[in-house]
Image 1 (cartoon, rainbow, N blue to C red):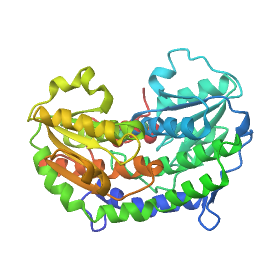
Image 2: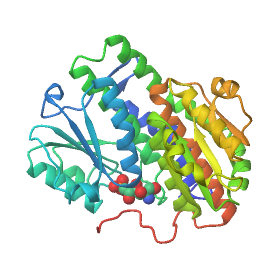
Image 3: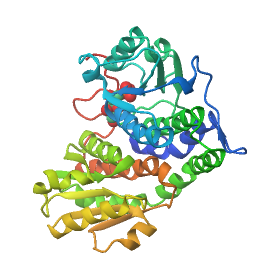
Length: 364
Ligand code: M6R
């Protein structure tokens, strides 16, 4: 049941510290600050390229993973929408690794892509939340998230638990090909181990998001901006808002703004900016100045350092915990979930069962 919560969506948002911790427990050894991946029937060191295939929110988890694997392991990663991948005759090399991300493990297009890769001789790794699902059974290896049943149609805890598994996988690939030093492994493991506590802290500020959501609920269109691994989180934030509030939203890489979407900016279009203080901070902050100069109402989501450095005044801000940039995309997923939820409440939509959507898309 929903317990003390009004909807499954918010219950599942609040479960994240617990289920992320449960998921990390399957791979992270906090004492030694090392990771242990499940036994794989192939040697990760032989992998020359990783193909990741998924749909919807799971696809955005794949996009974040591309940043992680390419940065840490220095091998190329392709991330593909399953319905495109399966019909475009992708060029695949037998012996490479393909990863299929699916909460339900039953998504028809993702399953078809898995079979395509298996027939092409790739090692297929599934990442699912349902151990006995078709995708888990048909893959060479199944990795599991420990999110527990996700009832809300809008995916929340499945996404963040996918991300922590994928972060460990990226570290595992990097370690296998000699690119992750024990010091780095310890440092990143520590950053991951702290994620549940940081999210729990952040959730205490839910009320601030509720207040901001009342404004956003008046909008017809909303833009989400992010850079680097927070770019996929901008896409995820926009998807979440569309799904549960029916407000039109678009996610953009902040650097793309001046290539088109800036034409949309006026004081009726809220702009949600995901901007941790990392090496890309200054770039995104200057995009914020540009849109504020054009009258945009910005919701600036950053940490204390990032907020104090911002030279202009956003309409609203939300303070995130200071974390290692490696785990920032996991944390920044949570305020955009809460924002979508509160905007939906303000609009009176059916949060857990949005119109036209199914929890599991088993037909193409
Ligand atoms: O079960 P899956 O992870 O394969 O589902 C993929 C998408 O259908 C799913 O993420 C969908 O986009 C959600 N409604 C997002 O909230």
